[in-house]
Image 1 (cartoon, protein in one colour):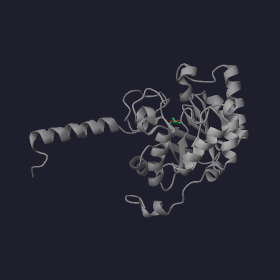
Image 2 (cartoon, helix red, strand yellow):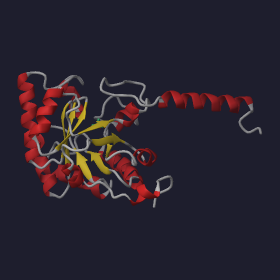
Image 3 (cartoon, protein in one colour):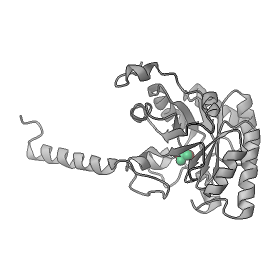
Image 4 (cartoon, protein in one colour):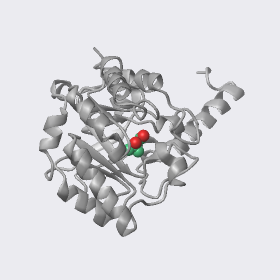
Length: 271
Ligand code: KIV
């Protein structure tokens, strides 16, 4: 059991299940954050309701310029570490690019592996109407599904950038239509990334699923952020929607500088 550093009360706390979280819609806002390994999971687990093993790990952990290269094997590897260390949060694993788009059967098998081998409790996939059959089949296989609309980073080459989606009347109508279809197919949650606040509000009021915003304003049923953005540990790029609560990157640099100085001067091992 991986319980060091976790209070007795927290160790006894039940893990959030997806149905319990969905039942919270419209009540206490749901807190979701990404984590990619056991240490991170232990640090965040006491404070959040959902931990997402996001394919953002392709950028903030692996150093790629987008999420496209991330593989199913890699998400399984990271998900297993997170699931091993979390006690309280519902663990959601991202389905990476090309693990679900090609066919319904492949989507169900990939989702199944994320639960069976990655020990996740639910999966997340990106996209609207074209992936509704996949969502329905995954839900029918007994796997809770989180959808993802608006800016869908796996489609970055088709979208042409990370700018706000659903700005035109036609775009907003299409996004609402997609949200309703995903909701009807059984999604438990819908991540809404970088869309107009009023559109996020309309979607939130129109669906049974819990909406989780990232750059989508205050009217969603919950919020999600990338861990590294919250703690100042991703120097390459700071999204406009990110709020930094801690200068982790600067703190680590200061610690490393002090360590290197002590070793080089001989002070490190001297009494
Ligand atoms: O990959 C990820 O971390 C995500 C969140 C930003 C929602 O999809």
